[in-house]
Length: 265
Image 1 (cartoon, rainbow, N blue to C red):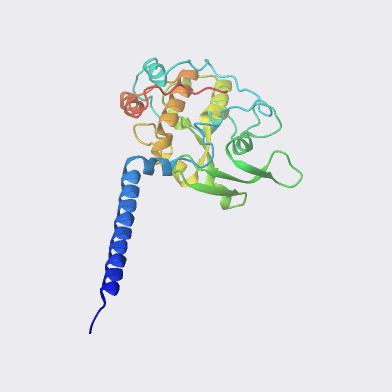
Image 2 (cartoon, rainbow, N blue to C red; image 1 turned 135 degrees about the vertical axis):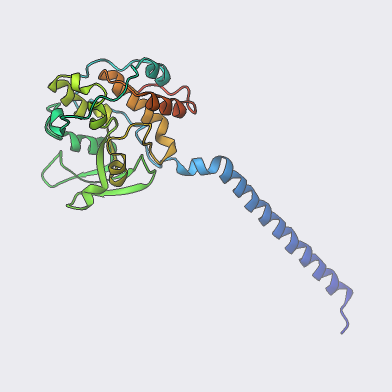
């Protein structure tokens, strides 16, 4: 079989073009892989909407302030951590949830209980039950502890998917100074928006009464804010930390030395 010189040249040209395309595709794949394993994996984990680290703790248009024991110290979370007392846990005796008042009271007297206040604050595209401007029926959230997007729907089972977490667990607070607070101060601690975040139900159950030494959010992007919020709450209510807890908090803050304390804003 005889092949003409022109056909041979055309075949060679197509072959070179094919190889050039393969090289371009390979370089594109390589650049994507390099991007992902440097910055991309962290960018991909960022919430698509404002999370707790961006959203305000307090919205004065419909919330009223809860008066803490002390104001949150201004400045870095690391400095505030160094200002907290370091002690061992007090005995976990006589602890009852009722020591912090009835769950989800309307402590700020704005007409809505605390659970619905926090759902309204933390969810986007909030819908209310028919005839109510308080009872949250639906909404969307990029859940802070796991970093996953969740659609909230009120219901006997579905409501459990998003729970309201006490950033400083009440059981932990009880063993680290809350026994010395007045009933009114403990009620404020349990309902203070600073100490409350709408969060993944299973993650909240896993955390239980854990402190930073025993539990941190799976989503590493929220850890600096989470630890700073725990420090801010403990400073605001005169609670202490254990040495392992302080060490764990310092390790988190080492990655964000400029992390400020968190206050109602």
